[in-house]
Image 1: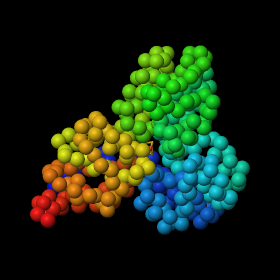
Image 2 (image 1 turned 180 degrees about the vertical axis):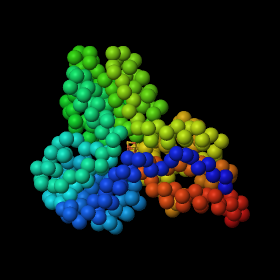
Image 3 (image 1 turned 180 degrees about the horizontal axis):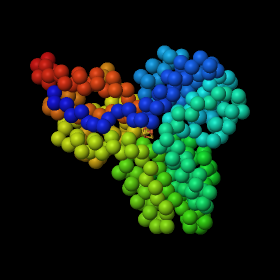
Image 4 (image 1 turned 60 degrees about the horizontal axis):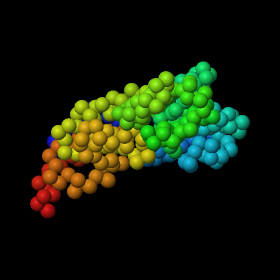
Length: 298
Ligand code: SF4
């Protein structure tokens, strides 16, 4: 099988640094035990399993506040997605030792919304409902920010005259840059006075642009990553909507269905920013060895 190995793909520096902090914490015997991660450090099951083997407990739940309720003692690690100031405060009140692995690209948006609100702006934040990253950003300036996922959400907003007068827009870091730009452009049309920021991180942008530039001519794009990883799911969307190449997401090689390969000559492979390289390499290796005729004869 002819395989297009989309590049760059896979782990970004934010994920690499966060994992490094967790591994370091696991080795540091001076840290209070147990060591918990508040939510999945990255949205990848394989990575979570690896950290569990090191003795670091990943807690999960609908939001950071309810996850924190499960912790009475020890060390908590905040994930690369960032947390709200309230979560940091509650963790300190409980006497927990805190390690913050928030990605610097997310921290920039936290800082931006605080500055905007300080300067009197009301903020429209383009992001995904229920994702931990918006939860942290919204918690920085609650009461001065609305979460919008799409154009319909923008239309449904009821804003006061003062909010409309000084309005700004910013975004989650891991969305589709084209989709998000459409929402930001719409906000600019509805509120021409809006100060707009497109804050998709550079790692996400580069991986999405690589898909658009490199998968053309492929019969299928396989995206390797966890179903809960937003940037992984966006790569599927980008392949289909921006490059016009149908796409499937798999967590690892065990989920690859042979019928997807039937009649295909060229497959593109990429992976989310939280997918370990080893998992993607296994998929690429399998595809490179794969002889389409074998299945056709059986
Ligand atoms: Fe940071 Fe972007 Fe990686 Fe998220 S995808 S951890 S924002 S570099």
